[in-house]
Length: 221
Length: 221
Image (cartoon, rainbow over the protein chains, first blue to last red):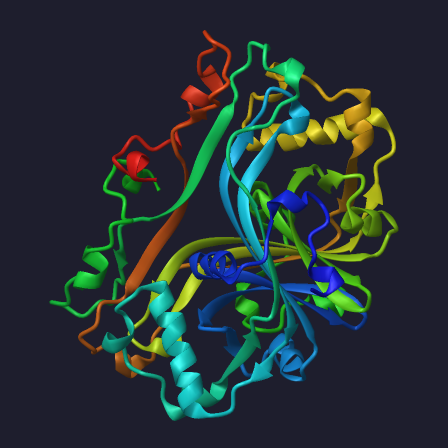
């Protein structure tokens, strides 16, 4: 394993297996893509989608970041999910539960229209499974305007913290509440476009999504 | 404005005012911190907390990243909130609603114990307002083991997408549902530590949190 990929701080939280890494990539919509630009770091948030052993990012063919990436420069791509607030008895041991994945490598620009189309299908289906067959597919002109980059998942690691707070032995007797506040991303009720064509109903693949909230919190945002 | 901070792609989404930037920093727990390490990019997720015109990050004094930061190297610090899935009538116009902030600069290591203590108070209070006065404060040894870095908020920008999908004129007549699926981070019901001292109840500052969910989704995780 390359030295930079070996996790040194808290190595008990490290994981290098693809199942762990893939599950983090697949759950997260956004990655933070780091490159060196004019000798300085640049960290850009962008959507990512995995297909097998490749991670895809995409954007405008005119974007400076994507053009730099297409040149085969080195990338560090990091994805982070925050799962909970960890409340310990001491300030020092407060923490968060999280899962993060970090990939290193160089990206390759997709050239073939069919390959680009398949990658864009993966992005659309990641947002909402079942969506792709219903929408207008990309035109040749749109495909040309979209840069899609493939980063093979090779040099990769994950770091995971889960579970309760870990306090110093002498602090367990303190009269202070300790535990975890889980955090979850929820999909709220769909908001139809004001320009929605009359008679178009919410499709089944959106109605059936079990993640929607049907509580009072909808109305309060 | 330095050239790298000016947003060139979709400049109508750019914002440079501190109110917008601060609100993004304050809502997000985690930032992605980019540095150049051995001539390659490195992007590390870490908690961040703002106090006035300074952004703080912290970690183990033994961390290689924090030691590198303490040397005054250049940083790019990016924070991203994903607010919704934007479902357009064409695949091409699918998007997400988001708010991101990007800061450039060099960080300074805090030396004074009192200043470090105040920064740690900001981190704890950001997780749960009202928490700090109740927990054991950091000992001199703990303060020494914690590196706290301050990045003045100077060269900074925000990028925001909100609102409905924007389709091509000829696509509005299509029989396809379009709109936004809002995403929200929810705090679920607190899970007490199994080692919680008998008789310690959930404190008022946790009970009163209106973000908790009281729905069936609690039990299914």
